[in-house]
Amino acid sequence: MTNDGTDTSNGVHTGGTGGTGGTGGTGGTGGTGWAGWAGFLAAQPELARLVEARFAAYRHHVLGTLRADGAPRLTGIEADFRFGELWLGMMANSRKALDLRRDPRFALHANPGPDTDMAGGDVRVAGRAVEVTDPAVLARYTGETKPPEPFHLFRTELTEVVRTYVEDPHIVLETWRPGVPLRTIRRGNGAEPPTVTVAPTVTVAPAATVAPA
Image 1 (cartoon, helix red, strand yellow):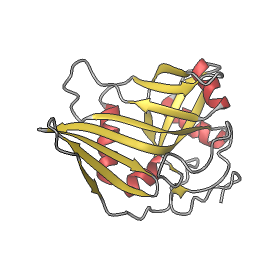
Image 2: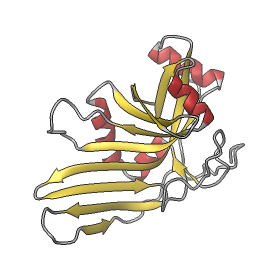
Image 3: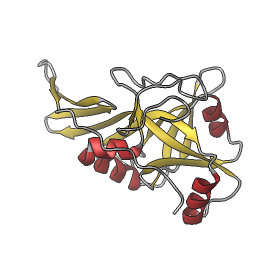
Image 4: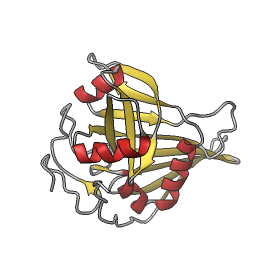
């Protein structure tokens, strides 16, 4: 149990007040909370690998945050996967960093690439970004990545992962939320209704703890 009231025993957080910004612990619609990248990987390893590969295909992606007046802000950002987590690093006092300090909710959309092919599908994740202040974790991270300093480092806690791709003649939409089975919707171009498949629930392994090496 962490000091914000979240239960991390199974890799999926299910309670608490949500910390900075006042967001609740229930996550997206139909979910039971949020999960770190390791929790998502344990629950849906194949989808997690596809999502990570999609982000790895390009360096820069699109981050959505919330301004003080609640309007959306879109900015470019790099997505960094290491130590079993998805990290977001940004310049000190940048607008997006100040947005996340005020309200940790975010959405991250993978770079679609230069054409309409989108090999690997269209991918986006959403959740909350928790700023890292632990000196040991920061030291380990900076030791590996050598970022320009000073900077802000945020660890992501996911409430939703979505992958969209073409499986001719269908558009396929895969959606995962913590504590909820993977849901797959296939839509055709005709008048027929979409088909919905719900995968069996996967028990999430204990969450990995980020600690100094």
